[in-house]
Image (cartoon, rainbow, N blue to C red):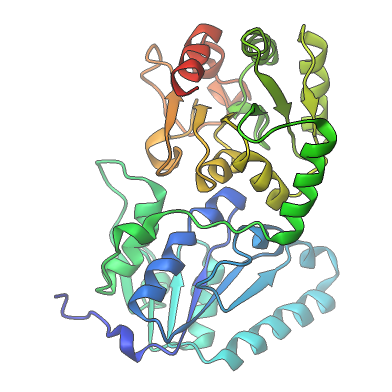
Length: 356
């Protein structure tokens, strides 16, 4: 037993802060499950960016989700201060006993100081300001590399709360509205459950993407095996351009739902698929959360830290590039990752066939 472990029975309210992108927030979902099992009478809230809240909505262990809007900074100084002050008043009114800050975002340290919980935990940092903001600090991430889910759970371990294996799964609850809309779409397109492959080739980061011509060749090869391909993409100009180039390179037809689905609707769609194919992105984590087998391609990002969690999967990486994972935005910062462009269609197709 840790000398500074806390007693979960003393927790009335806790706040978990995760200010990152969609996939990162989804990977934090087990923290709520584990904490709720340890402290069933505790109300557990989340603080996330407003656009990522859909990753945690309907989570059975979460009482309230509080939002920070990154657009506040564009409203003008007075409006931004007003929005920040309203958020702080709302959080203070909750009277948190515990704050769990899962990143190195400096805002979390300031909030913890202002909220004054009995206990608080965050990843260790060198600055005195940071160290003095929290009662508990998790160790530096070190070798061997570990999955981000386990790193998140270190915050609870540091408090003396040991995770239960069943609670480590990702939790994503799409909701009835998403279920209903996707059911209607599948019926409209004549798609049967587990009778199609979900292909999501894009990412907000181009250096994580496989070359378009190779994606097209893979889709053609899968279609030649009498598999229906459902193509999705985020509603952004960048991903629409990728889809347009992809469709021009393909010899076969696909069901194109690009830009037509919310993230919760995407979760329902991928839950009905026979296989998900994509890159290191939020849709890949969503597929894993929904239990759909995943084939994913990794380049400069770390597959051990960010790979599909607790689902049947195949991760395709280049053994010819010992420099990966480098974490760079393409080789030399050039936005193109040679460790990805080197991956062959045959490699990816073989992985798909294995899982299919």
